[in-house]
Image 1 (cartoon, rainbow, N blue to C red):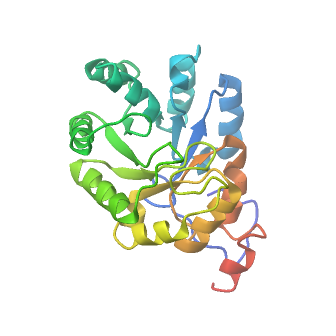
Image 2: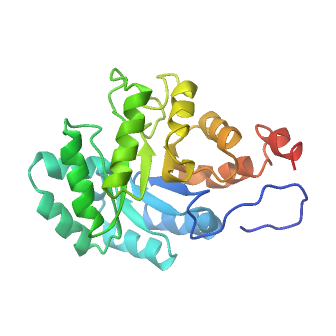
Image 3: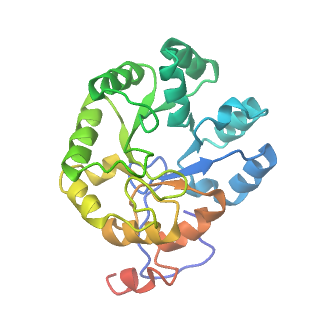
Length: 256
């Protein structure tokens, strides 16, 4: 972690490569110049980059962008919606070839936009886990579809057993479905139930909104895994993790 000066009573952050304290960035179509700018100030705080939903399909500088991330030692993966787009068209083998073509070491398996039997989803996880590191996403993108906590827990644990490296709690890029109500408010009871049965280091919580990030940092600590972070929110998030923003200022300094 980069520090310009010394402060006492600052939470200790994990260092890369991290299993916890993990930050996943959502790239929704950054240009190569924007990627360079982001990396110039925030590369220490980025663990992995998701090229959101199916933006990779229409990004004209995809190879160049992936090369920039690779040169910075930051892995990328393609959004789960793209995986679903291949599956619904019966093109799973083409998807696997795509991962090889772009030398991608990670893949996301999700079923937020399509109906996919859970056993079938786990089969895809198991097959891909032999080729790449798999992140599986749990939760629906349909705001009307409410999944009970017991099912969240069962889905997450089963997908980890199938070969997923980590499971992602769905929230979309706006943070208004899945783990959250339409207002962005955290379904806190759901989160606490999940944490009672799934190891915290195995979960990446999608939390694009500041209030959501603050909630998880206060609940799980500075080294909670967070995802769908906007490029311009990387440094602000790091200050939240370190108790150097008003939202978590006293949460840490009073305990250390």
